[in-house]
Image 1 (cartoon, rainbow, N blue to C red):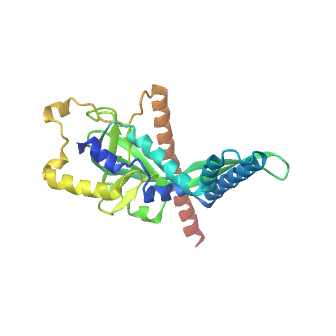
Image 2 (cartoon, one colour):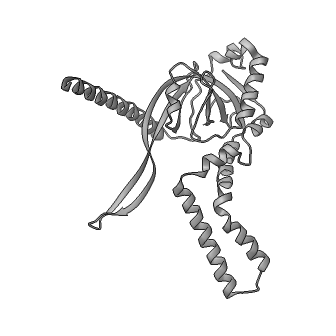
Image 3 (spheres, one colour):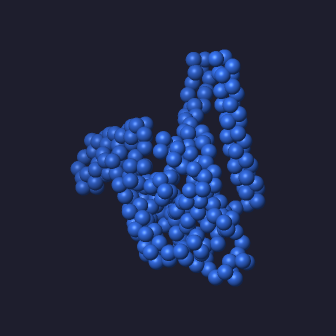
Length: 279
């Protein structure tokens, strides 16, 4: 099911200024907070040195910069979250999409790399990995995509066949080529899944209730006519001007993830069988 929504409604769902949940999502780890504190400290020290060298020059300007640098650790998450929101708001058209969970699997993704030296003085690359849940979603028209999120215990409730709802975005008025997908909502579990909460969730829940009351049983169909639906090619989440080589690389990456998951399943089965033989 795909129902286009107005630009006004879209801008309510994806605000230009970060919300509280978006601020918390961008706040980051202790390491991120310490990095921002270091930037604030260095900025204040530089302003202090400039004030000593050029005292009495542009006092008001230096006072403003002092506030900016001094509280950088506090206000910067608002800025970076607003930048993320702008990356969603750049799409001109959007719609309410409803599909189902096709598959779920877990991967370990590299989220950060740091250079270090061992005892012998050799350069070592330290990879910071994070376990993530991968939820493959799709519909009967052939649209498929994967939503990733940091793995949590509540994700155990996700199962194949569960309905999912989200916002899809595109520059095509008819939403034929879907370029971006928001975080998804699983109504049966009252669960949100996504790496970043780009939606105003209270507005989204109110909108889905309004659409359910407005369309009722008709909501299982798209807004296009049946005759045009037969000739419509399947919607696919292709990024703009994506080359064939990138498409093949994406297919290989997905196949590699599936093979990795199968190897992990076989490894657990062998470990279980060895344990039972030892007992």
